[in-house]
Length: 285
Image 1 (cartoon, one colour):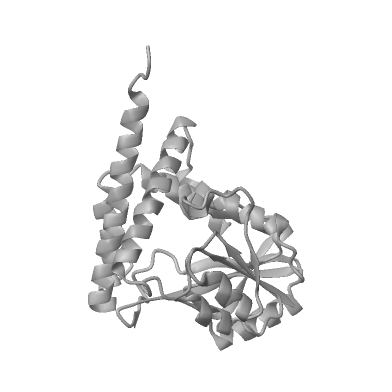
Image 2 (tube, helix red, strand yellow):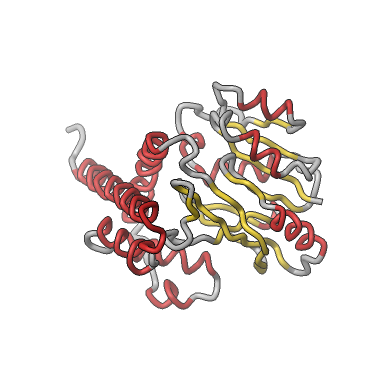
């Protein structure tokens, strides 16, 4: 009843357990970005199909545009079922969530997509408080969803949203802190490029919609634009996660995670300034 979509890039460490957690589906698609490790071998051995986007630049994450990468997959991958569940290789579907997924598609009504609550783990602890937002759209009708933004895309859903029971367990540090930092160094470049592009287009935001829009993802769009304009953003992000979101209740793991997120935000600030300064310098004569 549900097809599975797993985007990958060198995920031999995590993919096996991810595949086991969705083994209840007979239509699993590993959407691979030209991995150089055993990712494809592991996927095929588990009975999954491996798909690669033609002409994608394998040297750049998602070929340089995550929204474009996701949208290509939704349009071109031959899913067996009407409903698709998106899961990353370092995530696991819990038994309660698996049951909720089946129940949701059996009685979807007018819903075009469903949100799931994700649990992030670090230092063998669930980061219950320090997450900026634990809710993500992961179950959807592929023809009724499209993504926007270069990185960390925002989903545009054509229809109403439902909410699933159960948790999606996420292990973002399964490959170590060094890998997390390297990945977010890459992501921060895309974020800076996105901010610079928004500024060049004079992107507008509504304070009213940032906090009052009924649609969760419309609120997120305007909240991001508001956040980009805040002074001392890295410090504010630490304060938001560690104090306002009660991250201190997550102990040492919560403090470390809040610091890492602040470092990530500072990388974005530095790179945005660099891009903006470079754009203001005349080139050529």
